[in-house]
Length: 106
Image 1 (cartoon, rainbow, N blue to C red):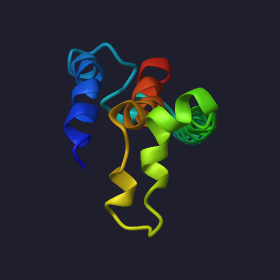
Image 2: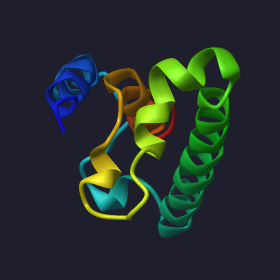
Image 3: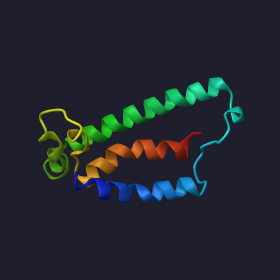
């Protein structure tokens, strides 16, 4: 839980860019058709799922695992705390796809 403030700090540049209008987010539903909105929902799910899979797989590389990702696997019992038991870099990397998507597709 000590790493949460640092993970939040890593996300600040993405938040600032979003607030300043540098993303492809749109404000009104009538800006795009409902078919397009369904398509972007599907793309969002696939983009995040694929990137988080590959990021997580990369975190299991022997050169990275013991320094960054092992802390997460120390939690054996699934609790709400285990979902936040990350090294700050691990948490940032696994949350990165959510932040990146809004810069790539509305």
